[in-house]
Amino acid sequence: MTLMRWRPFDSWDPLRTLESIQEEMNRLFDFSLAKLPKDKDVIAPAVDVYEDNENIYVETDLPGFEQKDIKLSIKGDNLVISAGREEKKEIKKDNYHRLERFHGEFQRVVNLNKKIDSTKIKANYKNGVLKVILPKKEEEKSKEIEIKVE
Image (tube, rainbow, N blue to C red; front, top):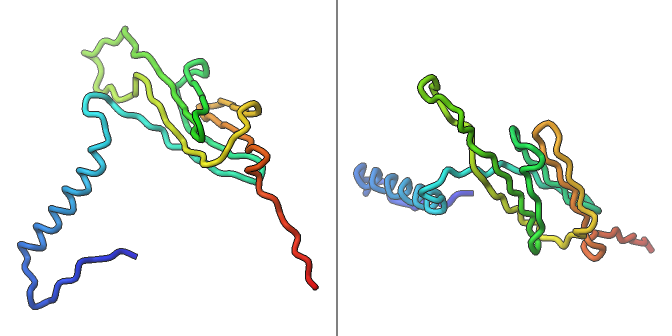
């Protein structure tokens, strides 16, 4: 449910309404753009995170990267995914219409909110998809409790 500012109909002012819309748009752009670095291209691949009783699973699409260029690390309760790709130096820009493919490095931090057994982590990279299996530590695994009916 969204809360809206209430204004009585008899005091409706179209100019004030436009000002209000402009203020909201400015607030939206200030919030979203303030966190982006101004001098660099930014890439942050989308991730899918799901879990069961034993593991947390993280999947992300990293097309065009080589396995050797992808790095994974655990820092506290976070999984850090980073990768990089060098720019091709042999480009004749005169014949190109667009150059949109990402070159450079990125880092994506995924907060797991669970303690992970880092000695048993498995990662697989196939067809541009990175799949990481993060086993939960014993104390983090959920246990079913049987309820007896009397």
